[in-house]
Image (cartoon, rainbow, N blue to C red; front, side, top):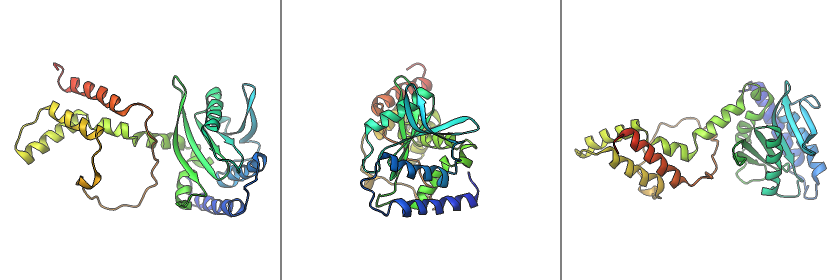
Length: 268
């Protein structure tokens, strides 16, 4: 998404950010001080130009968003900043999402300078959001290279190449509810029927497979009892981790089960 030289520059900037701000005792730092950190984050790490591409105190329906980041006149995401000394909360999230919803901006970043939460705003009724990924510079398992890979999606050079569309596609593709739904497709059902027939020399109906799949998806199965095939090891990729679905997964899968059953057997 970005050149190797830009990636190296980002990595150095990330390390510098942590050294300058996160190795010191800033427990009393207020919001105005935290914004100085975010200025560095947006310019040195993500590569945006001050004034031209970073708008501060942007008015939205009588209130002010801390930052709006744009290129070529297109607004890509907003940043809501809270004091370094406080933890992020649902109240802060609602504020950021409301700003984005009122301005038609699809992405919001909520941060206190040490934690960065990246949300996709869903323009539904009601408005909702998904936490696509989070970086906590103070976490014990913090990995600067993993942080780099995630933050690359929000780098200026990547954003103009529609990186945010890419990260959202990866997120939605890996959501458990979506992957579970694919198990009910006619192709998978047909494949399983053939495999089971070959292994057990017994004929199975589509409904038998669908009912078994419903139990697999909706019931908890101890991992130690699963026989998971081993795949050839490849270079580890940073995974965009979907959050828990807001819908009832069992209800959703039951509805999909009924739809797939009708497609396979219209007379059912």
